[in-house]
Length: 157
Image 1 (cartoon, rainbow, N blue to C red):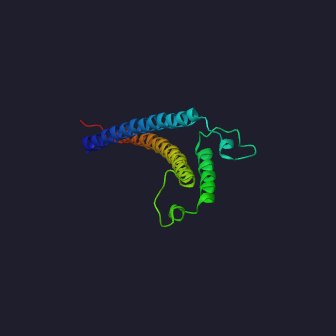
Image 2 (cartoon, rainbow, N blue to C red):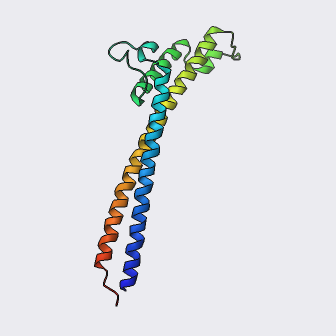
């Protein structure tokens, strides 16, 4: 019986260590990608003021989930000022790249999508890092359980 409990304790210890290592990996990859996305956004050097946002936020460079979402929502409002929807922009016709209204609308939707993609990417990196932290805590709990179980296991003769 003692050997079975010892084997179980070792298995739990190994799972705990694997969980903690995986958690650290998730945090590392999440932080690296978070930093990469923010650096790419900063490199564009677009401020909220460039998009028509006024007030205290106007000088903020778009490099976070909140500024990217605010910028994307602003562009969406501007785009809807051109036409409420793509279908209504075109009417019964086709996209005409020589039509300034069509071109402005398509550029706005591209920038809007870029910013929403940034929001999505930064949200995903946050979730990845939070999952990694949970894995580390779970791994630590498993290691502690394995150590306690190993100490409680009866000695084998």
